[in-house]
Length: 190
Image 1 (cartoon, one colour):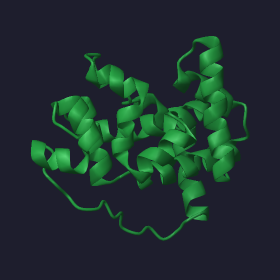
Image 2: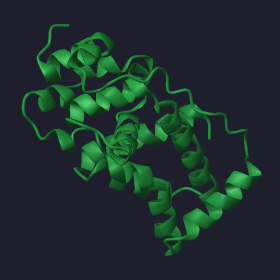
Image 3: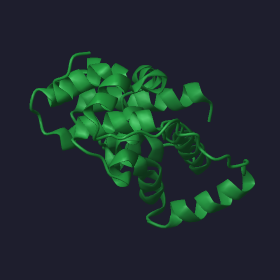
Image 4: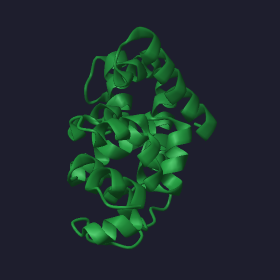
């Protein structure tokens, strides 16, 4: 699946969720379930690529600030949530996660909304498998097809460069690396 097509799928699910009032992840599953199984697998491949590209210490630090902490699983959900925001926000976060300080959800979180609910969107991780289950009636069908797809489309798995590790509990360090988010969540000066 081409990157533009992937973002079209995300954008259509956003529009569908806004129009229907249904949760984004449910609309996404519905839309994927209307596609051929091969396209769902291609969607999953592109999703994983974009998800993996956000596997960096600076992005994790942003999630840590926003969530008041962030486990491995929480970070997986956060990256899915960034993808769910759409292409423009994804690109902004990939360029500099401190850009999230401008997102309305983040501003709301900084002003007292339950941080755990902001941008940590676990169900988006499972949209492709949910679509497969809806089509086949078999919860394991996606994983069987995925294994076959990955063998046929195997690429060299290079180690992920997460960038420089740093202490998320050091307010000075967080303020120097993510000054605007730190100002929102730690009350420091940018």
